[in-house]
Image (cartoon, rainbow, N blue to C red):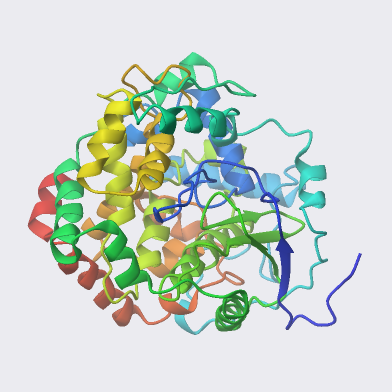
Length: 476
């Protein structure tokens, strides 16, 4: 197997057929003519572990404030739990946590200026063979995560039937690894908490551009040829100081805009060349690398890196913070940072909870003309169901707008640099964890280093999407 000559290389592998990663239901930005079947913006190993824990333990990630999980609210209890984990780590009883850097865990509450910290050294990684053989070998014996399990195995056949029926047939989906009814029931309740905001965001975009397709062309720009995709990816990795750390695949038929796999041995970013637009590509890289990848790397060196440690510390789920933060970063520097995708996903899930598949498809014509795009969104909202003639939804897609609005609500009090450095944690846990953080070698994306500029762009996102502090304070 080939190895790079230096850490200043970017590996780009043409993948002509399927994605080397798990073929899950996408979180792409809703590009028409592209199936939105995806990996929740990347298959991240530690998220799968936490997801399994949530499914087995009955955690309701959509109602975190409803006391379903006892929170370690007492500082004394939190400190005792942290000290216990520290002792375990120092005795070598917990192989999942190792202190990074010479200071290890002997110092708490390290006072470091995150904005000026130098990035960690790049690491050479082996080149993956085309087709993702290495990934398949590693994941072959792993139990599919919930997102893989709810992907229909007969998708194309049912799509053909649906289109031939003049959009009146309600698909009947089959699953290779069916999810238990209890799990589906847990995700079958849609929220209407932010429905007014979602509809308003969509309507103002249509009022301004006329249709989603025109919005996409005006704000996303033209599709990029492969050489320009490679050039922009390399340039972005140079900005972040991570050239050589991530293996990049280019795919013609990846069922998402992009997906990233963060693993202990390698990290792989796969980009769909058929949806890479000139003004949106860097936003996708901020989402995948600047948020998911860096938070995953930072998480691995923290005390709460393992699922057992998260339980001991009573940490909240990392979502909706994780996807909310990544979604904000996707639009952060856009000329028009309209939160279209997050809003439409939220709206679609809500409607799916009340409508059959065919009725949902017709309902979405209110916002999207292209039948392929509407099919994609309907699939996302109805995934996991066998008989789509009944009302029902898979509510996970509401996490994006949910996370965005919560972060915007508390944007003036959240330390976003620390939120990034702590890894896969909720914004609600930042203050209680800061004294136990290992910050020495944490990674910070370039767009977070200027606090004032970052804050200005968050305010602009508020303005463009007609969100007010008064409104968010009343809602959250």
